[in-house]
Image (tube, rainbow, N blue to C red; front, top):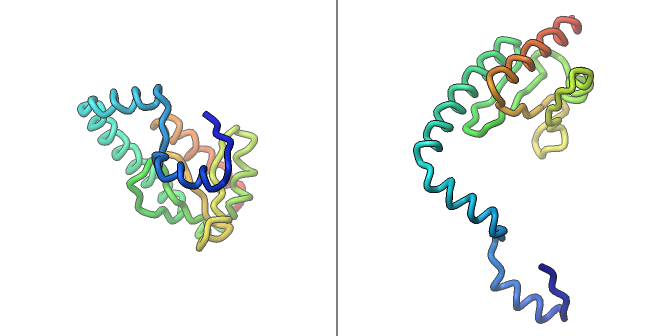
Length: 137
């Protein structure tokens, strides 16, 4: 919805606004997911296994991969001497997008964030990175 009014009234109404508003549809989905404990547990196990395998494959390329509990990995490309921007540009022809983290506080132009996807998608990225890094030497 939308509200138009005096600043003083809107400021008072903000005190009653939920910190994170959900639509009726999103709320329904959240309730269904909360009741799906077995699915959640299965997904966590699969994601952890996939992330671990993906991390090992990336490490095998010579990059530094930080520990993660999320469905993405923070990768430092300095050891293979390629910047995040160079890597992103090299992946463009393969229609693979990565998150350049050079604008994150505390990181520099060698950091990328890679999503943990399916084992097949992860392997496509690993194989493509191998080709890019081999061509750089």
